Length: 147
Picture (tube, rainbow, N blue to C red):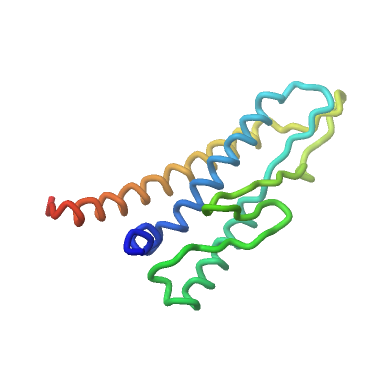
């Protein structure tokens, strides 16, 4: 019980959700890049904006439920993702609407895909750095170390 309160305190659940979303989305983007020149390939993606809205709603719901100090962040289900067991996220990618269909019926846009790759990696990096900092503070407190 005490460990649950520590591991679900503050921003940790939201940061875990962000890292889970970003890591799974990175796989989708890498798949799109790997198949860039494949004829008839339709790239798939999930909306980071939709996830951010769902995460913000889940954080607000947690605040209303218990003041936001502790507790899991329960992200709702959408067409593109849902929260599974143990706070894991299940992504259901969809074919993006944007993109020009080329002569080989491939609608990939390499520049936009690479931009998504970099933005997604930066999102993961920021969430991981914040998570590492928060857990480092807890480790020091548990170990009774000041510095």
